Length: 134
Image 1 (cartoon, rainbow, N blue to C red):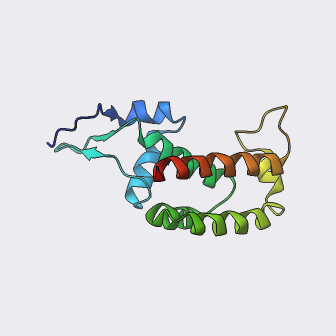
Image 2 (image 1 turned 90 degrees about the vertical axis):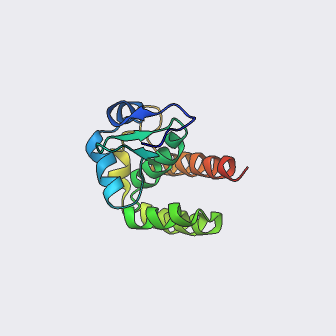
């Protein structure tokens, strides 16, 4: 097994940290969307804390209704122009998805606007992209 200089987090703990479940992490790994930094000889998966940003980006995009296939295309290229185009297309579709957005887990009693949710997601994703390019 390859050793890393960064502390590793087991799948269950990473799932809790990211407010998801292990099955989601396994699925994302199976489809090539989000993989652990390390898989040992026994098949145990390990993540690093820095991977939370990427997982959060995926969650943001998924929560505004973007298909995993399109998210994967962005994650693979990490092209800001591509992201901008994907988000603009998604914003156009958000009127159709308004009922979904109203039930999004991020929504609180104070933030009931799907437009606000979209802008919040856009801000967070763009901030993560900017940080990753620095």
